[in-house]
Image (cartoon, rainbow, N blue to C red; front, side, top):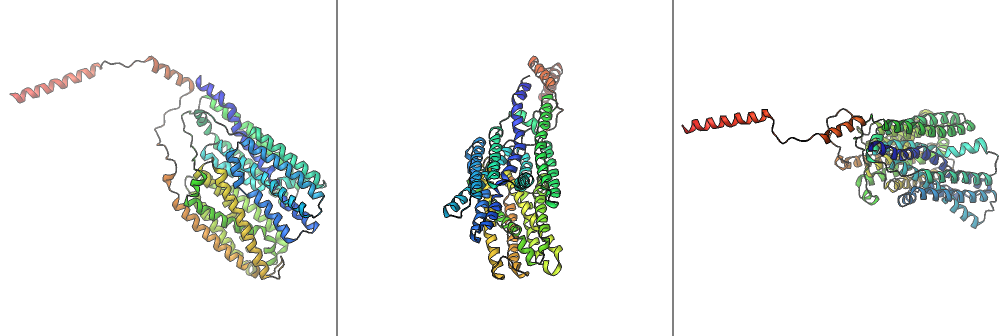
Amino acid sequence: MDIQKKINENAQMMVFKWLSIPLSILVVLVAGASYNLFAYFQQIGAIVGYGKDTMTAIKYTVLFGYYLGLLPGLIVKFASPMIAYTMAAIMALFAFVGLGWIAENETGSTAEWIIMMILLFIGAMSGAVATVASIVTAVKNFPKQSAWLIVVILIAYYKIAPYFEFSTRSAFFSEASLLWYFAGYGLFMFVVFMAAAFLVKEVTIDKMVAAAAAQFDGPGLLLFVLLEALCLGAFYVVALVYEQWLYGAIIFYVFALLNFLMLGVTTKLIIDQVKSGKISLTAKVDEHNDKSFVSMLGEPKYICLLLATFLVVGVCQTYNFNIFQIAFSYQKQGQVDHIVDTFWISEMGARFGGGLLAYLLRNQINGYLFAVAAAITGAVGFGISLLGEPVGASFIFTSCILVAVAMGMFWTICPQIVMDDAGPKNFGLNWGLIVFLNVCGITLFGELFDWIYEKQGDGTDKCPGQTCIFVQFIVFGILCIIAAFLCFFAYTKDKPSEQPAKPKKEKEKPKKSLEERGRSKEKKKNSKPSDKPSKSKAKSQATSASKTKDKSSNKAK
């Protein structure tokens, strides 16, 4: 009866535990609008007549706000999810309303430019805070092994998130003024983030009940993985390939609803199974590690991973941002849209499929080895790209796929490794630093690419011939090889002894139902231990004493 009472008391917490999955997915999707700010305002800048430096400043202001990582990590670490989401909601509403006004009333004054940059940073940061809060809270609510799957789910949605806003605008608000559209979408973000503030919680469940429910965490999360795979595949074909944005937007909203329906089915099945008493309540939950941000900075393997992601994501995203220039250099301007779509689906496949593969093989293949393979893949991609001019367009697409796979794998394997090594408590900071170094790499190598590109050409953003990108790709390939060595060195420092010791397996006993446990406890209470030796034992003791006495008497004779 006590066990049933515990289960009933923890049932609500189990609902909130699983609610953090679909609601975090929705938050991450909605927050993707923050990333799109630089595209909107670069378009406005092109109309108004901004110079190249201003356009670059807009781009990197938004990228650093969206990918800053460390500041959102600090907010999430020292504030509750409610405070973090509330901050994100207020920042989003304030920034988007202000930016909507600027978009409609652009005058080009210096004061207005400064205000615009501040609002762009705040708007981008609002998405970062909400995203980090969602990932960290969801991971904290589940055992260690399940955290890998949660990272796969949310990091893949993190990639597609900007298309949620873009498809919504293209489908329903293409004719609306930016003033009202930005104000309306800022209000939408405010509502979603505030809903998360009250509904996404860090839950504490009784250990015995949590152990029983943990047996269903993996299968339950795989259902959300299946829904995500269907959503990504359908959106890619309908929206990105055929550019049917109305149907793309409908796909997003339908699958967001299906995630909440899956929540109801999953929690009902799990709670019913736990209450049935037919499952083991003695299993142990695989606890998270707990390493501070400072202690991780003292880990050579973490430092190597930081440098590797800085190199690989930096050079691969630079490739992505400069696909038009690359295609122009190879005289393949007509293939630009196909190359962009190929890069997107390849990176998404690596984030989603590669992360899922790493989860399934986590006990057989070390995560750092996946990072080694990803870095080598990127190096091969840049090497093959050098053959684009003499061999043909097929090699451009091949290099595009390999470079995208390398970047996608680093985006998903790095948070998985950090989560496994350090746990969720300081994940916002530990992963936040990785994201921050990613954007630093994107900035540094992006500027390097542009500088060499202009030097090889006539100073414009169009340079024909392979010589325009030859030096960059050689340098980028070498940097990927260096990253592979760094990841392998990190692998050698990832000692098994640093991981929590696995409990020894005991001989399995047949599971007992709750009623049988109650009867066995009653038997133990009623039975009394006997102090008297049994008759057979007394008889054997007497025989032994007799034999000893006979031997002693024979010796005396």
